[in-house]
Image (tube, rainbow, N blue to C red):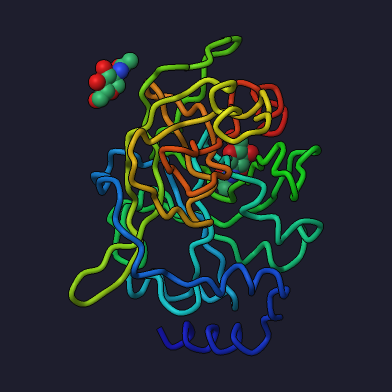
Length: 284
Ligand SMILES: *[C@@H]1O[C@H](CO)[C@@H](O)[C@H](O)[C@H]1NC(C)=O
Ligand SMILES: *[C@@H]1O[C@H](CO)[C@@H](O)[C@H](O)[C@H]1NC(C)=O
């Protein structure tokens, strides 16, 4: 305990400040007024759907003592465990680290697995540091094309099953299928505000229908999921990188949307079947 405090103080003093962009992204604190749309995920139902945290000052010493995330940690995105030591996410989520993959900023990332409520004690949670970020070579920040990245974890996660991806060689387009999206939403109780994992039903629509709703072409390597509800969901950036799951397999990575999950504007996901080769090459 004593030495923890010393390390904490030391970390506070010596840690360099994150880049402007990182700060801008992270300044966007929990929005307590965000409505709770979706159903809280049951503990253990989606242990491989995780959260990426960024710690301004690298203060992570106290988790184990207090069983809670304190201080400066910010949840930045959703992610999914796809094998023992890789998680899949949106390139957007970690784009503030683009070109700085080897810098000390990388050591400020943490992946929280088997967690349904952030900043609370989650029995069985697995927390890992990040060793590497691999951005898609053709990722375009402006258009969000190829918005996909793989993070290599320091920890080999052997206690949780990874989330299955589509079967090799499948040409499935999932049009008309029901799916589930998982995102992080703000829950408010009498005493605290924190983020919890929410699940919500969606249905997959064709890219042509999706393109006509948006009024421009949605790329073939994207997948569109509609909430089928008139009620718009105020999705925030920190839900990006999360999955859409169809028949137990992750078929998309949450990327962007206009009026997130609004009936008129389906959510746009990176289509996993279009990236299977890339994922394979980058998870060896
Ligand atoms: C994780 O597993 C890989 C290969 O399966 C092994 O090379 C590596 O040493 C392991 N890392 C740890 C921290 O156990
Ligand atoms: C999708 O879900 C809706 C609402 O629960 C249901 O009515 C419909 O039959 C489902 N469609 C398929 C293809 O399973």
